[in-house]
Image: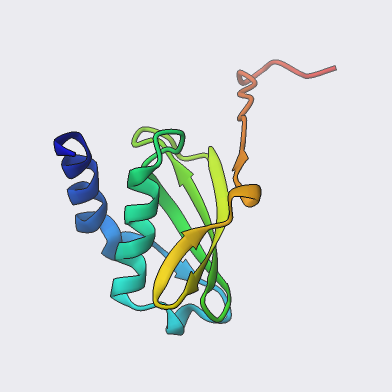
Length: 108
């Protein structure tokens, strides 16, 4: 549990910097953002930095995450709130792979 405290604290401190976009962005509260950060922090298979939260429906979001040194989406998922608590849709978790092509090299 002690190992979860540091990433969770970092996530909560940076939650105000997380962009909330989409047609239902105004419906996402600070507590919702905190719970979404806690979902990510609790998953060992998921990078801990949330790039953005897309409020796609009332009480449902699409989340993109990356590592602290990354800027590309590494894992994305959807989550919905039921009875006041957020849950990740396990089937929606997608792991992304970024391919970097050095400048001056053409892909054929």
